[in-house]
Amino acid sequence: MSGARGSGADRSEPDGVRRLGIMGGTFDPIHLGHLVTAEQVRADLDLDEIVFVPAGNPWQKTREVTSAEDRYLMVVLATAPNRCFSVSRMEIDATGPTYTVDTLRQLRAALPDVALFFITGADAILSILTWRDAEECLALATFVAATRPGHDLSALQSTGLVERVQRVDVPALAISSTDVRQRFAAGRPVTYLIPQPVEEYVGKHGLYGTPASDLGVDSRLHGGHERA
Ligand code: NAP
Image (cartoon, rainbow, N blue to C red; front, side):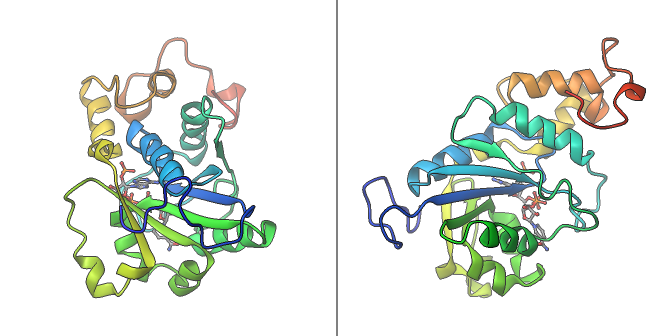
């Protein structure tokens, strides 16, 4: 990883400053690659905590995205066992399109004395210059691009972002949400690719083309919210 800091290595900010990782993604669904990424970056960059921020309305996506509430609850189920992980509803509860710059502004305002690290997939970061207020995003947080080893990031050169983005290679990112969705739709196994509670949630609610379980909750009981 370029610019990686293991525990005990130098920090750029004074001692005692908390370091918060912000794990941004659509998480449709969350998989072990995301969890391994978060834990690896936490250790490599000596972060105190990681908050997962599922995207509310990923407006740049052309495919239909699973409801924000379902994606949020799957992230909660997946991250619950790790005491350094938490999940934020800030983008889920926002109305209209969600922009990373708004998320970072809110976090900066709420946590003025905390060092922020925005972690997401390298492919997403490659398009950062198309994001709203990209320069401000890069000023508000250190950006960490997670990618599988050997993945070509040469496009980053032409963006001038090479020095401003930290790269972390994560072998487990060979797992992808697209593949997991396709596996569900085809009835192929997903065991060991996603946490078991997430697999059970998908089956219970009939997501990704799986037949909804007979034991599923009647949707009239929860009005589309707070179902787990
Ligand atoms: P994406 O284009 O669906 O994902 C690009 C690649 O990155 C995929 O291979 C994806 O794998 C991987 N990835 C996504 N999140 C990851 C994570 N946290 N850790 C490791 N790999 C990850 O990207 P996206 O999920 O829609 O968006 C990523 C983040 O960028 C979100 O926080 C989103 O809000 C932000 N974003 C902001 C703007 C803006 O402000 N204008 C525009 C675009 C994206 P999987 O499919 O397996 O996850």
